[in-house]
Image 1 (cartoon, rainbow, N blue to C red):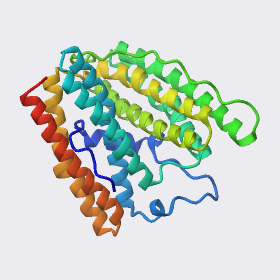
Image 2: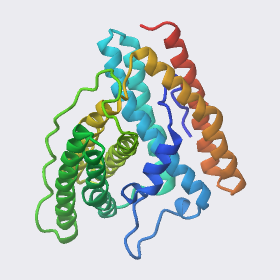
Image 3: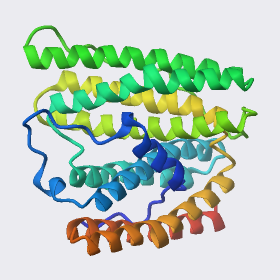
Length: 323
């Protein structure tokens, strides 16, 4: 295990919401394996408790990466250059180290065809079930702006579904082409409070935010796998859709949710989240993994706990001397 970059920070974990997004929604379950295809041996031997803890951890790391991306932009708006840089460096490690290593251990990344099937399952759920339901509920609760956003995202996910289906057909049959990635229309997320009035709408936004963050992270590692395997067109498709999930969908939902506050408020949230991960979440995961004999996972959880403690210190220092 390589030494981590300790001077980064992570976002408030929101473990209950992350668990809901990762475990309860079929869109974000670990990708299934094609009939007859073997799972990676390390993943195949994991205990159910370790596998569940890895799922929860991946959801938290993906959400941290996404949130920190927009906390960085807010720090830039306030002229806090070093804080923005810290957030970006932290976001990169959350995705590039923690999420990726947890995904590798959990066997999330399969063949390109397996990864496309997993993406198709997620997009199908979002476009046919999750977002239409959220839109109806928001409309019933008088949150018309949220209803419109949920409906718009449902259509986008339908387009993503069609693109992934076409890509899978091209890979499996050798006929047809892998579609070009969609254009990205980025949304700014300024500091502000919630723009919805219903507790149900806000809870649905929370679930959707965690789902979009996780989709972005998964599609990013799928893209890297495709690029390494000599499929640059598929890598571009995965990367393009990942950018839409983060910079349009997550961002639009973040505005309505009131995710971003002042940089001081964001730093306080970040310290709280880092301490939860360092002192509660990852140590408990490590103990369970050790008890189950999943020693590689236990080591990874302990390493991540040490990282998060360092992140909390880095954020606390920045909070005391913002610049």
